[in-house]
Length: 473
Image (cartoon, rainbow, N blue to C red; front, side):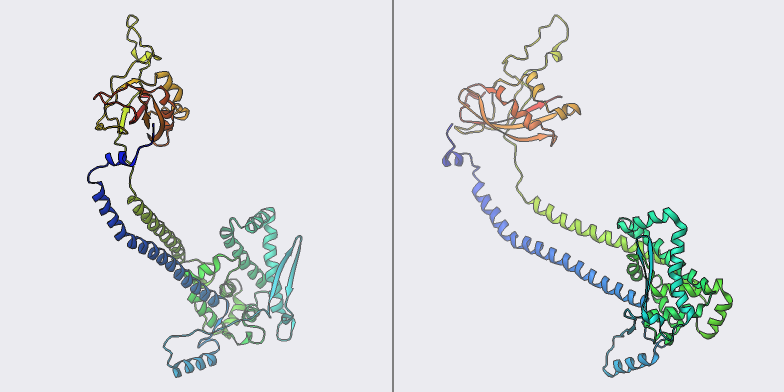
């Protein structure tokens, strides 16, 4: 059969097709700028939202980290600097409050390093200079020794935990245990100097701001500073990825522990440090408030909800654009079940004849609602001379569908020659989707043949017919 000419195609057009096509183009042209704007604006808005959120979150977490690991200039700590800053702010008419932090930059410090089976403690030279007492050095070394003692007591299980932490898989779940070990090491270091909390606190203040300024820090001011971050969501985020507690959390925890376990040294320390609050236990790292836990859970829920909304927004945009795409039509399909039933289904008793499943007996239960045309027309009322037998159906039946007891249909579209045979068939659809019935229907096309004319007497040669083959049922 020769290809259809342009004139033949125009014969099959609906008379209102050109006008409706023009209206459709007009709507598409008017809608296109809106869709482009919606896509660009939606993308930019989502990216801008996440960028601003992460920027704000990062600044808040950084501020919380500074609050918990340095000295905030206030009326309690370095009041002269605080007074000068306030005078300058008022002189320049700055309405916004500013924060000034004093911190130590890697001079008065110490660290513990694991070297396979060896353990090494590194002390900065300033730790051993004039102005550092023996008990301060004992506590600095003792906190590392205490940490190792806790690790020693855990034995092989502690080694397994350490390996799991290093693997990075359960890090965030193991870090709380690591922080508890650090707290315990600090306390054991205090016990090693008979509870001399004054020396331990002095050493921690020098770790904060250096050897020369450590003496000038007011412990009551640091405790009040700790109050600002206790239970804070941002302080939680600042420490959640670290195996070490914040310096101020350790500072307050050590004072609270000394008050309970070493009352006499603490009494002397309290007399020299007026203004310590009574609720030290609530501010220490030993207790976690329900409010803090709720904030952490709320943060993760908020992140999850924001991510879910973002995904829904993108899905809505994709689905909305997909809904505008044209849908294929299968109105030109003729429902054609298996041409010859299985003989087993026909047996009622031994005296009744059984139809030959391999005969070319014409089908008698075909129907169509499609009007016929001339050459190249859709064959609306075909008359089938032969079709796939039960054996053909069984041979083409998809193995997976057969194994799962799935029944359904496969629809194909074929060109018809003058003698009624079909060729150039293509799969259209299948039910259920993914069953393989459309491909199976293509395998049976060789057994399908139409009569030379359809039931209206129109020649089928050069026509196109849609066929649905039923599998099972």
